[in-house]
Image (cartoon, rainbow, N blue to C red):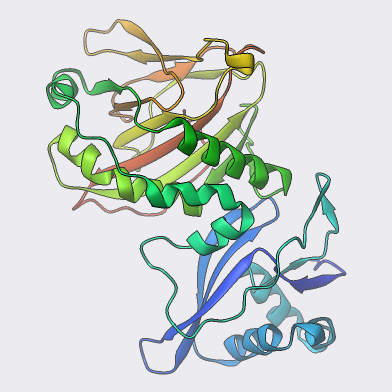
Length: 324
């Protein structure tokens, strides 16, 4: 492993101090990495945590202190998101665009990890704090039980879609979304702060429709390129119940949704045209689904919220396989 020549504190990170399981204080790191997405790390009490705290407390001396650190220490701090390569410009945007968020004396938000960081990156995403899910549409649960899928209109307001679109555009512009590696032209973000928050807020609605107790699995935000095709497929174990949300709007207000193909219980392929703010809830492991080529007048911004039965083992299956 070769370490980057120039390193600095990660400007896309937030730090908090929490009580460790065996006493002492652990460092909680919520961090975006260039092209690696968002992750939460926990550094238990010990030399590595002490080094991280020194860097955070004395940012002006970070470069000098890192020059004295061992290879293993620097590699571990990179993996934990405490430090990052000093890349200057990423896709035309200043990489170090935020003031460093200092270590807090209270635990980081467990229900919405990284939410304060997301709002600092893109203030319009704060509209999600006002979001109140609409009641379950009459007949939705019956449709879902009968065929393992149901289309849901107007789940998200125009204003919330605007905020989410600006937020993911900001992540992409800063190089904080990963490029997919399995043949589909798209940028992706796994379990980012806004996706996780919306997933929690919509969980009661999804549970009411599927009729069982569920828990969150992971989220995936996707920005597809023109011409992108999503082949028909079924999903991995972590995608038992999937809510696919349409975020983008067609250019100049044109009514040109990107068709969502899904196989019904009868075996017929159904085309669902999701308007902005609408979604489709379906059994991702059972219903084959996909998308045709994305045309220039269409938009390919989607947010996928995955859930599983509450008693199931969530695991950490977030490999880059074709998903909506």
